[in-house]
Amino acid sequence: MAGSSNHCLVGLNGTVIDETKHMLVLQTAKGPRWIPKQGSTLLVGGQYVSGEELRGRLHERLTGP
Image (cartoon, rainbow, N blue to C red):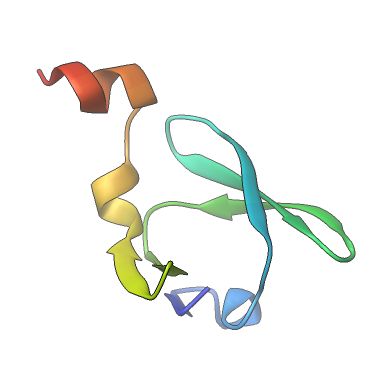
């Protein structure tokens, strides 16, 4: 996690294993953590990704409104 409105999540490392409309599930060394998409910035493959860009369900993001 590169940034978050919840400062406890900043610096958290792991792999995204699931997602819901508003949350990401991140597998960390200490187990799964539920991360809100809103207010979060992820560092993925050297690129910053705003959680706002990931809001909604995957199939909704792929097909559009």
